Image 1 (cartoon, rainbow, N blue to C red):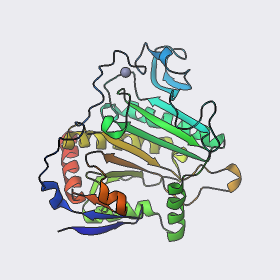
Image 2: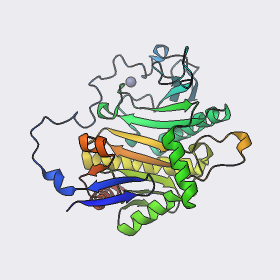
Image 3: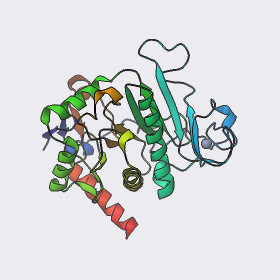
Image 4: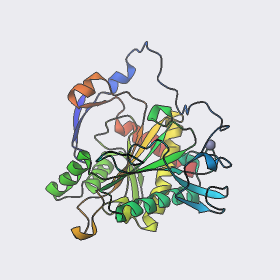
Length: 326
Ligand SMILES: [Zn+2]
């Protein structure tokens, strides 16, 4: 039976309708699982030896000299920026960066070892700090994996956008925290664990399928002691969060067969130094496998339809995590 659920963290309404997963489907399937565009790395600008094909690099970890090989994680400006660049109009100024996860063309975040995963998330935090300290209004960090999730270059990479305006969705999210006077992220994970939809229930970092999951196998991850934004994360929080994210992405691969996915950092706006402290917010990660399509009903009503019960999704992910760890 369909069920209407309210997701207090995002404010959205979700119709949980598991029976629709079994409806007949006579259209061709969407882009296959982790279809990343079919290239094998021959002409890839993010592979080692092709450093000259990107704009001059902004940062790296590892060895070697800028724009040469030897790096482990490499940061370059996006050649096709959403914001920033020469001639950007008012409001469209800012910066758009690419963070190449590793020199390995085929190694997605879920296949990184613990040190690599931690290094990548640490670089993203450090770049976010650079832009917050430069006075940008908001820093958005994301990772699109697979063509079905919006990735246009197959080589695994994350992106960072530093904006000179505060996106309305972010302003509303921060206002929602302030108006409830509660930590909605902690409330959400507690509700999930009560409902049996916890996935990784550690002392420091947790992962869970929200009770109000808007799409199949949606996962949220947060450090319990996390601050208002990624910029504030300690090295310990970066390590714990990176490993849980890696494990969750691996388990999603096991459950769904290398699906396309988005990883989104939900951050409060960068706090200007004069504003006197962080806003009431708790940064968290959203992981959304792109195995369902937002269609007409969702566009018309803003109410999302989910055909996989989060209890079922969380149970499957826990099973896969236990198998791998055991
Ligand atoms: Zn490559």
